[in-house]
Image (cartoon, rainbow, N blue to C red; front, top):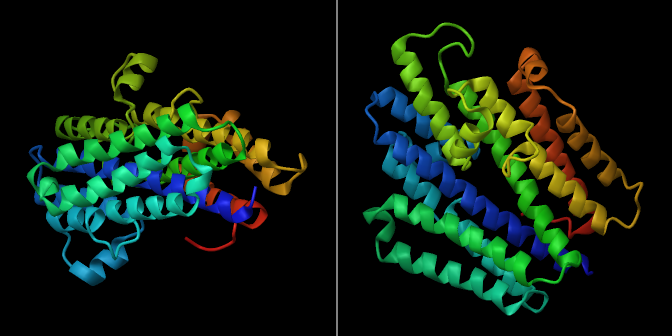
Length: 319
């Protein structure tokens, strides 16, 4: 496969996944903001959202004060923000258009229709009328894109690069989410907290779980009250949780192995080593040595892995 074709397919999937992840985080923050809370707590939530996406400096330069409406508009409609939903969907569609011949008709039409419909909805003011419904639509279109891809594409290198892009992006986003949200909790993870803290913590941890569609999964797996260390365990180490770091790296390694010409490839070795750290890791050890340090290192290694994949297989251009 031509490296340029693989590059477009890889980034098409990354941008589609990024749009979904942004919609998930915005949706949960929006729903949480409707709960009774102080202005300081609400602002901390929106600030954390910008921090996850590394958009705090660019937002501050443009808008200054953090306000819910401005943050949502910046992360949904601002075409000058490369991480906004509209920018991600446009980039996904442009990458798909560049390799139209490598996609099935269904896969191309899904990407194209998503972009056109999103632009129509934003112009018609549907986002402002019901942000929650708009976020659900973005998530649904991403689900549809993945389903159509798996259901209609030949299981060859094109599909492997698309899957690789999806799950590398997912691993990056989940790690950022866990890192920022765990730091937002003021009360001690394992100490005695006041009743007010416990109530806030419940909604906080519930919001984190809902942002990755893991609330029902948590109940099924642990059958217990929501505890921070178990939330971390579910989102980092569980291989059967679809959006966990472990599950994402399983997919990355599996698809990377299918396209690597050399089984001793350094890129494949590093991906396997990162996956092994998750496969044999224990949450109590991670928390004891420092969750922030672990996730910071994980993000550095994921970014390095992405750079290696670009150098070895793709067109080495920063997107």
